[in-house]
Image (tube, rainbow over all chains, first blue to last red; front, side):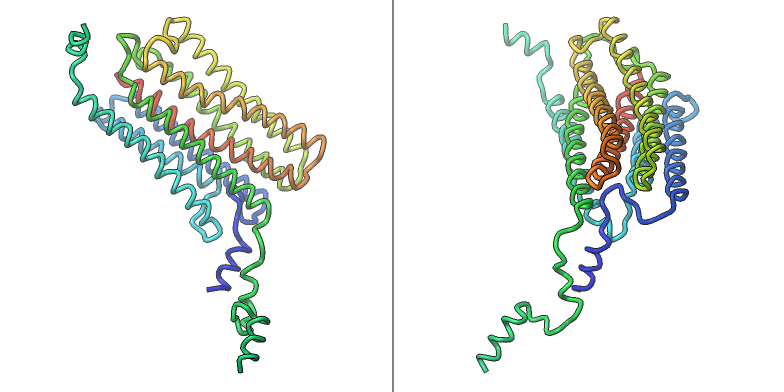
Length: 129
Length: 216
């Protein structure tokens, strides 16, 4: 137990830092990330304007592609891994993502509910007269 | 008996009983690069949480156009695609600058940072043109709740990019003036994190605002 913590301490990584690797290898990582990101971006823009797929599926596809591209950025540009040297960074990110989902999901949910239960606008105007 | 226990406790307060590697567990705080990087990571995440509030506002108000123009009539997807590619390439060159800083290559560092700067400025120019066009067409931020939310969200990202470019120029000047000192290296690392995070936020912006918004 104790030797494990000391080991982790020694090999912890700052966010964005990589394990030692040659310059060529590191550049290759960025090139891979750039290629994947460009591919996902191109797919997103293509899907948004095409008539080839079932139309209601398009918003879902765009959201999925966006999340995939964020993942590509996190892995290839910010060098986030699942390794023990990255636990702190990943845990912080997970908490951030939780808050983001609570804020966005909660706002949409509550506001949709309010919209549904609100009196139509013309009736409110009449009451104010 | 009591005396021996006391003596033992003072010599070995945590009762490690001579386990050799257990003492290393308290090796002191992590290196400064990790502390700084992690702290800045926390800031970036809180920045993303702030952006999520703007996104939530936009998503709630997107249909409140007050009989004004909708997104589908306003957005020019070709310009957005160019902006996206510019920002993506700038993220790439920023990564190259980070590598150049790690291997202490001044020439490549300055070249990559200059490329990042030019790409970022081109992005800001296109965004400024878009905003000016919208205002000229009578679709300024005062037109409807939808446009207020749009200008706040996209403008907030643009402000972040502007601040990033100021930071970038500062880093170029500091490397010229002070070289790759340890503290300068930490600042460069934080700048790279910031710039990559901006690109992640832009992915959400072009997907949610422009691509979803261009659907009638």
